[in-house]
Length: 66
Image (tube, rainbow, N blue to C red; front, side, top):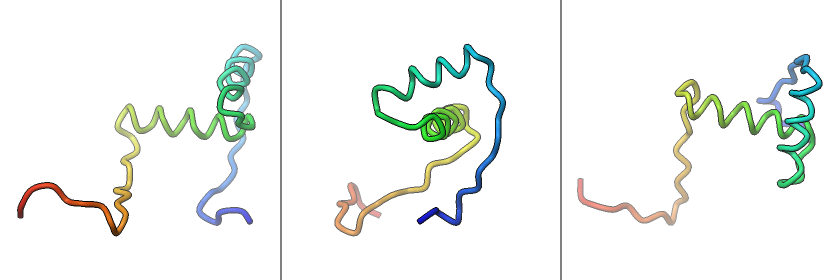
């Protein structure tokens, strides 16, 4: 089932960009779409355009005192 929060977009890649994306996708065994999503997400996070949501499990210990 598709995630309703995700919407597809279309991008045009040069041959060199497509080959680089294919090389990037090989090791973690991703489709080109998945590899593009991972690469873009990582870039957005590392450049401060996307903030990570805090993913704390219920059994996560908290350090320190409030």
